[in-house]
Image (cartoon, rainbow, N blue to C red):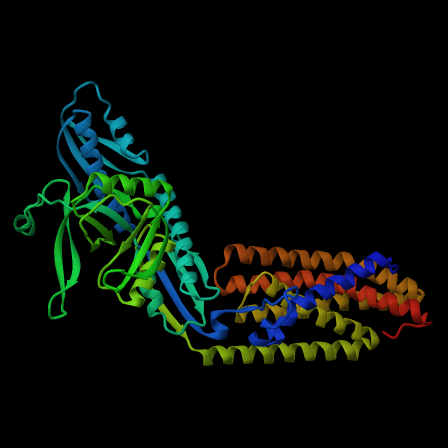
Length: 528
């Protein structure tokens, strides 16, 4: 065990050098790191919200809003399908998250369940007797849908936050309908809340030119038509809301957009937003504009008409521009929303916290002091109790700390205050492995064995105990990471990295240093 072939020696030293290079950027400022050669690593450890300050938002998915929207769409879909199948019905309406209707006459032996499943396969249909049916989402499909909505929302939140230029947000799920968002370094969350408070669901509709707006405003809305409002400014510069009757049929959906950017209108030189469809969207956009020349075409964003121009000619190429009362900032914000995609369900901010940079600096200072004090005390204990072998253990301890910082930088893990606690804990556990080895060596010496034999047996016998102890702790760290959230995960990450590093430094690196000293000095006794 004390024999190290040349390849093994170079491998150990190479691993140490690799992690040293990874940890090195943490000692330099950002300006200095930018001057590093391209082949050198430049990543640093990301500091969490509790260390550098920032904003914390707890977002809740408005599932009820989504369900109401889906069931409202289901009413229209069922009406169209029943009419197409020539099925006589009455009382088709949405009540208490259930769509109900009554069959008057069923012709052509149409199976009503097939009709409903043709509209949406995730629906359950209940026969209430006397021709009355109720349609709603099944429990299994609703549970699966909630999970899907949560995953989609997390992805879009991540894209929106990153599009806004914020670095390394922490986004985690909480339960089945909440998202925790932490943005280190962001002190004013208002812009972030503005981005996340909009679903950015964009659709294109034809304007119902036949609708009598006087009757519409008195509640007499034609079937297949809905009333939305367009914001404009009057001659005095005041905001006014213009009612627009649009057809409920979605001619084109915003999910076919592939790009959006803030620009300026060539005619008015005012801020605007340009957009571009994918191939399928471009073909549909060309067909719609070709077939509806002279008609108004409304662009709807989050149930508000943002523009409703008249189609002058067919628009080919899949490019378009959205004009309105935009500032440069609002045009940029709309472009970000459209690029990142529409949220499948609205998000509500139910908790908001801000951590000031001074408090984060205090946390870093306290963490540094605790880490430094812990390292000094541990190194002093090892030096006093084991002399030269204590120096070997202390060198391994410093390498262990370098490994942790290098691994955190490599994986871009976020270091939190509990993470620092995990780091201090693993440093104590690292020397614990050396204590087991050294005490075993002392025992072998007391039994009369030679220095070579005592060290050989000490490392070999203690290795099994060290592996068992560290593996069980590693399992606990993995479970903490899997089931924990937020700062618990930060603790688990540093704990797991520290355990792996301590096994390397205690079992391999310390043994290398002891074996090298032993071969060169050939001592008669061991100073331990």
